[in-house]
Length: 422
Ligand SMILES: Cc1cc2nc3c(=O)[nH]c(=O)nc-3n(C[C@H](O)[C@H](O)[C@H](O)COP(=O)(O)OP(=O)(O)OC[C@H]3O[C@@H](n4cnc5c(N)ncnc54)[C@H](O)[C@@H]3O)c2cc1C
Image (cartoon, rainbow, N blue to C red):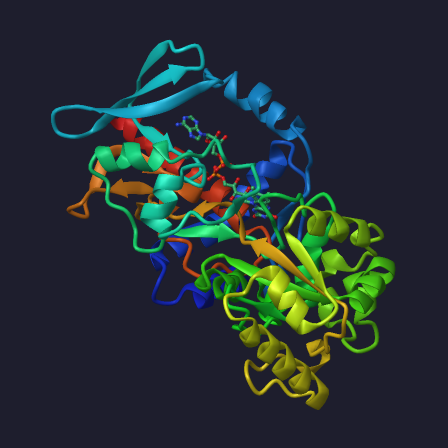
């Protein structure tokens, strides 16, 4: 518990609800024991694990573990699961206490659920462009399609019931290259981000230390990309393509970076990407990547507003690589690789896995009203709640599932206590 708590504390000093962080850290051990007792498979961290790895991970796969929870726990406990039914509104009594949920089945039938307490855990709002624009100030992200069902009804229901939102609400970004036209996930172009090659914005200007996409990929790496409006261009030379096809990103850096890449999340990208050329050719054919024999030609093909800006950017970058010192953004020298011709520019949009934060909760996972007092009978768990996550996100293994499981468990316990005490 001590290591987990110190890691979590350091990540969130001053911006998280530290009472909530502490409650989650304290519950995480008992939560894992409980999950293992109910059929989950979790490996404890190695004694020599780095602090950011010192979290227990759930390695159980598929539906089996949930089926077991359903059979052994929910059914004997008298629970009823309603699938294909969307919660739309919370019901409240005259003093504002939450006493039920209005829902709708897929066939349009309305459902009224009367209950002593409600735990909202609808996963955030990445499926709603309107909410992304309102709460994250932009919807120009690539949704990997896994969270479109999380369209913000939970947040909206709670707001209508008088809940306040927390100050830290953010897209849950991923470091991979992604593109709305070409599927960079299937063809593994997505892993190129771990090579940390030159990245330029819509103007053709370099804007970041690309090493952040390797060592703090989901945190400051994604945040640096987001600042530019979410879309950017990733540069890779033909010789780099050829090397990565055969040896993967790890092989390309072999010898120069030691185990630097393999110790970061980039270890995912150590495998060769044999179909990289075909994937790039397809991206070129579909107008999402461009290949130039010179910087001038590439700038014109991409359509940078002032081609000279890109030409100067590339010349400056290659000069810094040649000198081995990144005076402009401080990238470590082993990642400073000159880009020769022919050169590709690949258009990428930041992918999101969902959103983090929403309704403000206390450490009991009670939703707080606009006056700061808990709304009786209303609890919020998982990505829908604010107070745990702070921007930018951080690369710590299994932290979001940890929060989902622990916050759900704490919310459930407190909701049950509240409902039975009424
Ligand atoms: C591609 C991907 C990779 C990930 N990798 C990791 C990882 O490696 N480690 C990690 O810790 N976390 C990872 N996560 C994040 C982790 O899966 C989430 O943090 C976690 O599932 C969030 O749990 P939740 O209960 O808050 O939301 P969800 O798991 O999204 O559950 C919310 C549920 O509510 C349902 N719902 C939405 N609206 C309504 C409504 N109105 N009425 C009824 N139901 C509704 C949704 O259909 C959904 O089933 C990943 C997520 C994705 C998408």
